[in-house]
Image: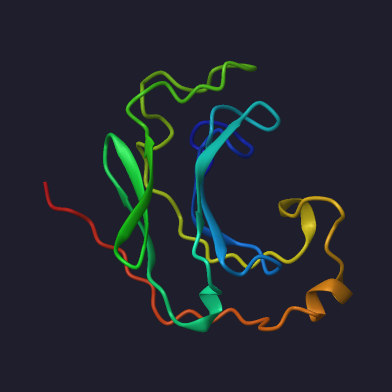
Length: 150
C-alpha cells in the first residue's frame, strides 16, 4: 500500500536480498525511502560471498525492529540500517511526520527475480547475455515470517 505517497519510494521498500546473475557470489540488501520518485534515497550493504550462492541453499533474512533493520545470510548479520531517524530525503515534499516513517507500517513480501533492466550497470544485459549464465535458476525452499510478541 502507498501509505506515504502514491509512487515509489515514499512508502518504503525493504530488499532483503538482491543478486545479479552476472555476479553470483555477491548480494546486496537495501532500503528505499525518503520521498516519491525521483526524490528518494536508497541505502544498504553489500556482501561478497567469494563463491556462488547457487552452489547451495542459503537463508536470507532481516530482523526489523523499531530502531534498525538487520540483514543476514545464514544466521550471520552483515549489514544494519538505522531507522530511528528522519527518513526524509531532503528533496521535494516531506511525506513523513515522525522519525522512522515509512518503516512503521506492515509491508508486503515480494519474491522478485529481475533479469536486465536498470538494476544492471551499463551496458544493459540482453536476453542473449542472460542465456549464457551458467545456472539460471531461482529456487525458493520456504518463506517464513515471524512477529515478536510485545
